[in-house]
Length: 426
Image (cartoon, rainbow, N blue to C red; front, side):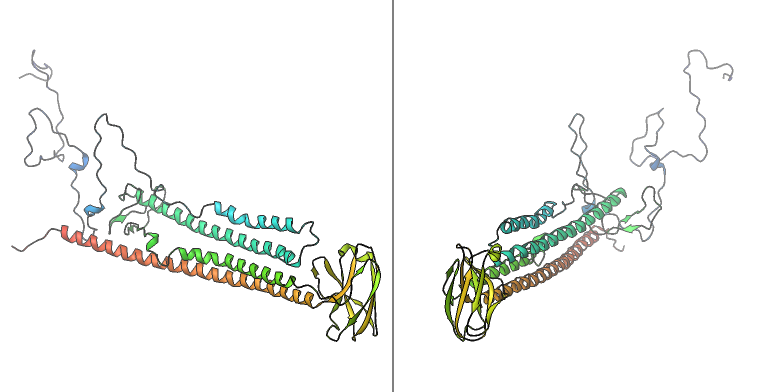
């Protein structure tokens, strides 16, 4: 036997010196049926987790996930095979925000276009009819309301859906970071009863959350009332506006077609004419001229008769063809009256009734009121239909979601009961 100072004998193999293991260290036991290690080879543990004895599950912990909730196992790629495409992220599966920004331009362009058309129709047009003037003033006001309401509606819908999209992105990111299985489309698929840690890097630990059922997508065709009622409600206001303008043009054009009834002859330039006034015509006569508003200072007319006669301010503005109501004739008694006028030879003068002018003014006022009433009623009916349909669709979607989740939970519970081990008494 050699001493430590002498070293190994010549020709002998040098044996490495190993320190003795500490008393508390134990090599892992080989499982039953495994072949023994070859002589001279020391068995190394495969991992640190194999040497640790994990504690048993405590009472009340959630059950393991069922097989249908486990993520699919992807086959390992063989050496030299092309890499598999990466699964889409959670953000890629989120739907796009609707309505698109294009609708801002659509609703915003209605008012400028209508205002430009009204300016082109009324500018340099002194002979425009009162119906055209009123419509040129009313339509820009109503189209401004349409543009404002349309843009506000698009903004509210987009803001709500963008907020919901950001909330869903944050939820999916938190769930994905906590180890919850995720589908290939990027949708978290936690099984019922799974505990999700809410702590995030850089934040204090929070109370753990319990994951709910996988998100349920209800087809739009299954939700009642149908989406077509939203379109119907949105079209009520434009249709009411169109009906109001149609009635306005109908009554205005029919009233303007009536021509004034002449009580006297026509004076060309300068001259005089006598005419007979009946009892029915007293108080409803006026002076008509073919001149425009700029020609009022170029002529003078005088009315004489058996009683006091003269001219006063015209009751309403009115024109029919080339004839325009200039002044109202003051006649207190029936009889024979004389009209004397002095003016340019291109102008004509006559005495005619003003009843048609008053009737036209009343028809225009009634048409204008009808347009306002139809727009007011159409706006509130349209708003009521849209809000009612939206609320009922949301409630129906929630009810269908709850029913679908209840069926999913029932299916999962049945699968769990079937997969649970059966113990029979011995």
